Amino acid sequence: MNPDSAQTGPKKEGVLYIVATPIGNLDDLSPRAISVISQADVIAAEDTRHTGRLLQHLGLKKTMMAIHDHNERDKAGAVVDKLVSGASIALVSDAGTPLISDPGYVLVRQARQSGVRVVPVPGPCALVAALSAAGLATDRFLFEGFLPAKRGARKAALEDLAGETATLIFYESPHRILETASAISEVMGAGRQVVLARELTKAFETFYSGSAADICDQLAADPYATKGEFVVMVEGAEASAEAHAGLDVDKFLRLLLAELPVKKVAQLGSELTGLAKNDLYQRALTIKNE
Ligand code: SAM
Image: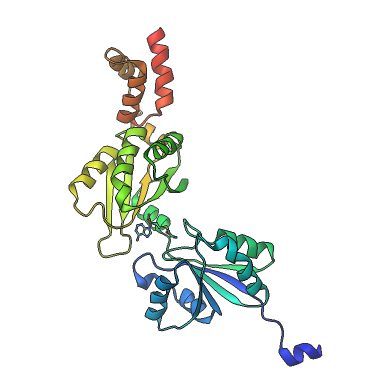
Protein backbone atom coordinates (compact mmCIF):
# COMPACT_ATOMS: atom_id res chain seq x y z
CA MET A 1 0.00 0.00 0.00
CA ASN A 2 1.21 3.45 -0.82
CA PRO A 3 1.83 5.17 2.54
CA ASP A 4 0.80 8.53 1.12
CA SER A 5 -2.61 7.30 0.06
CA ALA A 6 -3.02 5.60 3.47
CA GLN A 7 -2.66 9.00 5.10
CA THR A 8 -4.55 11.19 2.66
CA GLY A 9 -6.79 8.73 0.76
CA PRO A 10 -6.89 8.47 -3.03
CA LYS A 11 -6.90 11.84 -4.79
CA LYS A 12 -10.45 12.99 -5.52
CA GLU A 13 -11.22 13.22 -9.24
CA GLY A 14 -12.44 16.66 -10.31
CA VAL A 15 -15.60 16.64 -12.42
CA LEU A 16 -17.30 19.44 -14.32
CA TYR A 17 -21.06 18.88 -14.30
CA ILE A 18 -23.16 20.72 -16.91
CA VAL A 19 -26.48 21.05 -15.13
CA ALA A 20 -29.71 22.02 -16.88
CA THR A 21 -32.07 24.12 -14.76
CA PRO A 22 -35.74 25.12 -15.31
CA ILE A 23 -36.81 27.50 -18.08
CA GLY A 24 -39.78 28.61 -15.98
CA ASN A 25 -41.38 25.84 -13.97
CA LEU A 26 -39.19 24.98 -10.97
CA ASP A 27 -40.67 21.48 -10.81
CA ASP A 28 -38.68 20.72 -13.98
CA LEU A 29 -35.45 20.64 -11.95
CA SER A 30 -34.55 16.94 -11.90
CA PRO A 31 -33.74 15.05 -8.68
CA ARG A 32 -30.31 14.30 -10.20
CA ALA A 33 -29.70 18.00 -10.87
CA ILE A 34 -30.60 18.77 -7.23
CA SER A 35 -28.27 16.06 -5.98
CA VAL A 36 -25.35 17.22 -8.17
CA ILE A 37 -25.88 20.87 -7.16
CA SER A 38 -26.03 19.95 -3.46
CA GLN A 39 -22.85 17.88 -3.62
CA ALA A 40 -20.72 20.13 -5.87
CA ASP A 41 -17.86 21.99 -4.20
CA VAL A 42 -18.55 25.09 -6.30
CA ILE A 43 -21.44 26.32 -8.43
CA ALA A 44 -20.24 28.17 -11.52
CA ALA A 45 -23.20 30.36 -12.41
CA GLU A 46 -23.95 32.70 -15.30
CA ASP A 47 -25.50 35.12 -12.79
CA THR A 48 -24.85 34.39 -9.11
CA ARG A 49 -27.87 36.45 -7.96
CA HIS A 50 -30.19 34.53 -10.27
CA THR A 51 -28.77 31.14 -9.25
CA GLY A 52 -28.78 32.33 -5.62
CA ARG A 53 -32.58 32.41 -5.82
CA LEU A 54 -32.65 28.82 -7.11
CA LEU A 55 -30.34 27.71 -4.28
CA GLN A 56 -32.55 29.52 -1.79
CA HIS A 57 -35.57 27.67 -3.21
CA LEU A 58 -33.66 24.41 -2.64
CA GLY A 59 -32.61 25.48 0.86
CA LEU A 60 -28.92 25.26 -0.09
CA LYS A 61 -25.97 27.51 0.73
CA LYS A 62 -23.13 26.98 -1.74
CA THR A 63 -19.89 28.59 -2.83
CA MET A 64 -20.57 30.30 -6.14
CA MET A 65 -18.47 31.90 -8.83
CA ALA A 66 -19.62 33.86 -11.85
CA ILE A 67 -18.88 32.56 -15.35
CA HIS A 68 -20.48 34.70 -18.01
CA ASP A 69 -19.88 35.89 -21.56
CA HIS A 70 -17.66 38.76 -20.42
CA ASN A 71 -15.26 36.87 -18.14
CA GLU A 72 -15.33 33.26 -19.36
CA ARG A 73 -12.09 33.49 -21.36
CA ASP A 74 -10.24 34.96 -18.36
CA LYS A 75 -11.75 32.69 -15.72
CA ALA A 76 -11.79 29.33 -17.53
CA GLY A 77 -8.12 28.61 -16.73
CA ALA A 78 -8.61 29.12 -12.98
CA VAL A 79 -11.74 26.93 -12.98
CA VAL A 80 -9.89 24.17 -14.84
CA ASP A 81 -7.06 24.39 -12.26
CA LYS A 82 -9.62 23.80 -9.49
CA LEU A 83 -11.04 20.82 -11.42
CA VAL A 84 -7.58 19.36 -11.98
CA SER A 85 -6.89 19.65 -8.27
CA GLY A 86 -9.98 17.57 -7.54
CA ALA A 87 -12.91 20.00 -7.14
CA SER A 88 -16.35 19.09 -8.41
CA ILE A 89 -17.97 22.05 -10.11
CA ALA A 90 -21.54 22.41 -11.34
CA LEU A 91 -21.99 24.82 -14.24
CA VAL A 92 -25.48 26.32 -14.45
CA SER A 93 -26.92 29.10 -16.57
CA ASP A 94 -29.84 31.38 -15.78
CA ALA A 95 -32.28 29.01 -17.45
CA GLY A 96 -32.17 25.78 -19.39
CA THR A 97 -29.11 23.95 -20.61
CA PRO A 98 -25.74 25.71 -20.26
CA LEU A 99 -23.86 26.37 -23.53
CA ILE A 100 -27.10 26.46 -25.56
CA SER A 101 -27.03 30.19 -26.42
CA ASP A 102 -25.40 30.51 -23.00
CA PRO A 103 -21.83 30.64 -21.61
CA GLY A 104 -19.71 27.55 -20.98
CA TYR A 105 -18.17 26.59 -24.32
CA VAL A 106 -14.70 27.91 -23.49
CA LEU A 107 -14.73 26.24 -20.08
CA VAL A 108 -15.93 22.85 -21.36
CA ARG A 109 -13.39 22.88 -24.16
CA GLN A 110 -10.50 23.73 -21.84
CA ALA A 111 -11.66 21.20 -19.25
CA ARG A 112 -11.73 18.44 -21.88
CA GLN A 113 -8.33 19.48 -23.25
CA SER A 114 -6.96 19.17 -19.70
CA GLY A 115 -8.36 15.67 -19.34
CA VAL A 116 -11.09 16.67 -16.87
CA ARG A 117 -14.25 14.55 -16.88
CA VAL A 118 -17.23 16.58 -18.13
CA VAL A 119 -20.63 15.13 -17.22
CA PRO A 120 -23.93 16.40 -18.62
CA VAL A 121 -26.94 16.47 -16.31
CA PRO A 122 -29.68 16.91 -18.91
CA GLY A 123 -32.96 18.69 -18.43
CA PRO A 124 -34.93 21.67 -19.74
CA CYS A 125 -33.94 23.32 -22.99
CA ALA A 126 -36.28 25.82 -24.64
CA LEU A 127 -35.56 24.76 -28.22
CA VAL A 128 -36.21 21.06 -27.55
CA ALA A 129 -39.35 21.77 -25.50
CA ALA A 130 -40.68 24.07 -28.23
CA LEU A 131 -39.91 21.70 -31.09
CA SER A 132 -41.38 18.69 -29.29
CA ALA A 133 -44.80 20.35 -29.16
CA ALA A 134 -44.77 22.45 -32.36
CA GLY A 135 -46.10 19.93 -34.86
CA LEU A 136 -43.30 20.72 -37.32
CA ALA A 137 -40.95 18.11 -38.79
CA THR A 138 -38.40 17.03 -36.18
CA ASP A 139 -36.33 14.56 -38.21
CA ARG A 140 -33.96 17.36 -39.22
CA PHE A 141 -33.75 20.75 -37.59
CA LEU A 142 -31.29 23.62 -37.61
CA PHE A 143 -30.89 25.69 -34.46
CA GLU A 144 -29.58 29.14 -35.35
CA GLY A 145 -29.57 30.76 -31.89
CA PHE A 146 -30.46 34.47 -31.99
CA LEU A 147 -30.83 36.22 -35.35
CA PRO A 148 -28.77 39.41 -35.72
CA ALA A 149 -30.37 42.39 -33.97
CA LYS A 150 -29.93 44.83 -36.87
CA ARG A 151 -32.63 44.79 -39.51
CA GLY A 152 -30.34 44.45 -42.58
CA ALA A 153 -28.17 41.70 -41.07
CA ARG A 154 -31.26 39.83 -39.87
CA LYS A 155 -32.80 39.94 -43.34
CA ALA A 156 -29.53 38.75 -44.90
CA ALA A 157 -29.36 35.85 -42.41
CA LEU A 158 -32.93 34.86 -43.27
CA GLU A 159 -32.18 35.07 -47.01
CA ASP A 160 -29.27 32.66 -46.51
CA LEU A 161 -31.62 30.25 -44.74
CA ALA A 162 -34.62 30.58 -47.07
CA GLY A 163 -33.78 27.43 -49.06
CA GLU A 164 -32.91 25.32 -46.00
CA THR A 165 -35.04 22.17 -45.95
CA ALA A 166 -34.69 21.37 -42.24
CA THR A 167 -37.01 22.96 -39.67
CA LEU A 168 -35.42 26.23 -38.54
CA ILE A 169 -35.29 27.24 -34.89
CA PHE A 170 -34.37 30.64 -33.45
CA TYR A 171 -34.39 32.25 -30.04
CA GLU A 172 -35.90 35.72 -29.98
CA SER A 173 -36.41 38.50 -27.50
CA PRO A 174 -39.94 39.87 -27.01
CA HIS A 175 -39.10 43.36 -28.28
CA ARG A 176 -37.97 42.01 -31.67
CA ILE A 177 -40.58 39.29 -32.19
CA LEU A 178 -42.88 41.39 -34.39
CA GLU A 179 -40.03 42.53 -36.64
CA THR A 180 -38.67 39.00 -36.90
CA ALA A 181 -42.06 37.53 -37.80
CA SER A 182 -42.56 40.11 -40.53
CA ALA A 183 -39.01 39.59 -41.85
CA ILE A 184 -39.70 35.82 -42.08
CA SER A 185 -42.88 36.55 -44.01
CA GLU A 186 -41.09 38.97 -46.32
CA VAL A 187 -38.03 36.81 -47.01
CA MET A 188 -39.37 33.25 -46.83
CA GLY A 189 -42.86 33.85 -48.11
CA ALA A 190 -46.12 34.81 -46.45
CA GLY A 191 -47.30 31.20 -46.82
CA ARG A 192 -44.39 29.60 -44.94
CA GLN A 193 -45.63 27.78 -41.80
CA VAL A 194 -44.34 29.26 -38.55
CA VAL A 195 -44.79 28.23 -34.91
CA LEU A 196 -43.93 30.52 -32.00
CA ALA A 197 -43.61 29.07 -28.49
CA ARG A 198 -43.97 31.76 -25.84
CA GLU A 199 -43.34 31.46 -22.09
CA LEU A 200 -42.77 27.69 -22.14
CA THR A 201 -43.55 25.87 -18.88
CA LYS A 202 -44.88 29.12 -17.36
CA ALA A 203 -48.43 30.18 -16.47
CA PHE A 204 -48.99 32.01 -19.78
CA GLU A 205 -47.44 29.44 -22.10
CA THR A 206 -48.80 30.08 -25.61
CA PHE A 207 -48.21 28.51 -29.01
CA TYR A 208 -48.97 30.62 -32.10
CA SER A 209 -49.07 28.66 -35.33
CA GLY A 210 -50.04 29.32 -38.92
CA SER A 211 -48.64 30.88 -42.06
CA ALA A 212 -46.06 33.64 -41.59
CA ALA A 213 -48.76 36.18 -42.56
CA ASP A 214 -51.21 34.68 -39.99
CA ILE A 215 -48.55 34.82 -37.29
CA CYS A 216 -47.97 38.53 -37.93
CA ASP A 217 -51.74 39.11 -37.62
CA GLN A 218 -51.98 37.00 -34.44
CA LEU A 219 -49.12 38.90 -32.83
CA ALA A 220 -50.60 42.25 -33.81
CA ALA A 221 -53.95 41.26 -32.28
CA ASP A 222 -52.53 39.95 -28.98
CA PRO A 223 -51.66 42.59 -26.36
CA TYR A 224 -49.35 40.06 -24.61
CA ALA A 225 -47.52 39.16 -27.81
CA THR A 226 -44.50 41.29 -27.10
CA LYS A 227 -44.08 40.02 -23.54
CA GLY A 228 -42.20 36.96 -22.39
CA GLU A 229 -39.66 34.72 -24.05
CA PHE A 230 -39.99 33.18 -27.50
CA VAL A 231 -38.76 30.26 -29.54
CA VAL A 232 -39.40 30.82 -33.26
CA MET A 233 -39.75 27.78 -35.52
CA VAL A 234 -40.12 27.84 -39.30
CA GLU A 235 -40.98 24.88 -41.49
CA GLY A 236 -38.23 23.81 -43.89
CA ALA A 237 -38.28 24.98 -47.51
CA GLU A 238 -39.04 21.52 -48.89
CA ALA A 239 -42.17 21.07 -46.77
CA SER A 240 -43.25 24.52 -47.85
CA ALA A 241 -42.67 23.67 -51.52
CA GLU A 242 -44.61 20.39 -51.10
CA ALA A 243 -47.59 22.39 -49.85
CA HIS A 244 -47.58 24.13 -53.23
CA ALA A 245 -46.96 20.93 -55.20
CA GLY A 246 -50.19 21.31 -57.16
CA LEU A 247 -49.24 24.80 -58.30
CA ASP A 248 -48.45 25.33 -61.99
CA VAL A 249 -45.41 27.51 -61.33
CA ASP A 250 -44.89 28.55 -64.96
CA LYS A 251 -48.52 29.64 -65.35
CA PHE A 252 -48.33 31.48 -62.03
CA LEU A 253 -45.12 33.27 -63.11
CA ARG A 254 -46.58 34.17 -66.55
CA LEU A 255 -49.57 35.79 -64.87
CA LEU A 256 -47.32 37.87 -62.65
CA LEU A 257 -44.92 38.69 -65.53
CA ALA A 258 -47.78 40.22 -67.46
CA GLU A 259 -47.95 42.90 -64.76
CA LEU A 260 -44.57 43.08 -63.05
CA PRO A 261 -40.80 43.08 -63.69
CA VAL A 262 -38.86 39.83 -63.14
CA LYS A 263 -37.32 40.86 -59.82
CA LYS A 264 -40.69 41.82 -58.36
CA VAL A 265 -42.25 38.60 -59.71
CA ALA A 266 -39.58 36.53 -57.92
CA GLN A 267 -40.04 38.43 -54.67
CA LEU A 268 -43.83 38.34 -54.68
CA GLY A 269 -43.90 34.75 -55.96
CA SER A 270 -41.66 33.66 -53.11
CA GLU A 271 -43.78 35.49 -50.56
CA LEU A 272 -46.96 33.92 -51.87
CA THR A 273 -45.70 30.34 -52.28
CA GLY A 274 -42.72 29.99 -49.95
CA LEU A 275 -40.66 28.79 -52.96
CA ALA A 276 -37.06 30.01 -53.11
CA LYS A 277 -36.80 33.52 -54.55
CA ASN A 278 -33.66 32.74 -56.58
CA ASP A 279 -35.25 29.70 -58.26
CA LEU A 280 -38.34 31.74 -59.15
CA TYR A 281 -36.12 34.54 -60.49
CA GLN A 282 -34.23 32.19 -62.83
CA ARG A 283 -37.43 30.55 -64.06
CA ALA A 284 -39.18 33.91 -64.58
CA LEU A 285 -36.14 35.17 -66.54
CA THR A 286 -36.26 32.13 -68.82
CA ILE A 287 -39.99 32.54 -69.44
CA LYS A 288 -39.58 36.24 -70.17
CA ASN A 289 -36.81 35.55 -72.71
CA GLU A 290 -38.74 32.78 -74.47
N1 SAM B 1 -29.89 27.87 -22.34
C1 SAM B 1 -31.28 28.14 -22.60
C2 SAM B 1 -31.95 26.89 -23.12
O1 SAM B 1 -31.48 25.80 -22.84
O2 SAM B 1 -32.99 26.98 -23.75
C3 SAM B 1 -31.44 29.31 -23.54
C4 SAM B 1 -30.80 30.58 -23.05
S1 SAM B 1 -30.97 31.94 -24.14
C5 SAM B 1 -29.92 33.11 -23.42
C6 SAM B 1 -32.54 32.59 -23.70
C7 SAM B 1 -33.55 32.43 -24.82
O3 SAM B 1 -34.11 31.11 -24.77
C8 SAM B 1 -34.74 33.36 -24.67
O4 SAM B 1 -34.48 34.64 -25.26
C9 SAM B 1 -35.81 32.63 -25.45
O5 SAM B 1 -35.65 32.82 -26.83
C10 SAM B 1 -35.48 31.17 -25.09
N2 SAM B 1 -36.23 30.76 -23.89
C11 SAM B 1 -35.75 30.55 -22.65
N3 SAM B 1 -36.75 30.20 -21.81
C12 SAM B 1 -37.87 30.19 -22.55
C13 SAM B 1 -39.24 29.93 -22.25
N4 SAM B 1 -39.64 29.62 -21.03
N5 SAM B 1 -40.14 30.02 -23.26
C14 SAM B 1 -39.75 30.36 -24.51
N6 SAM B 1 -38.48 30.61 -24.83
C15 SAM B 1 -37.55 30.54 -23.87
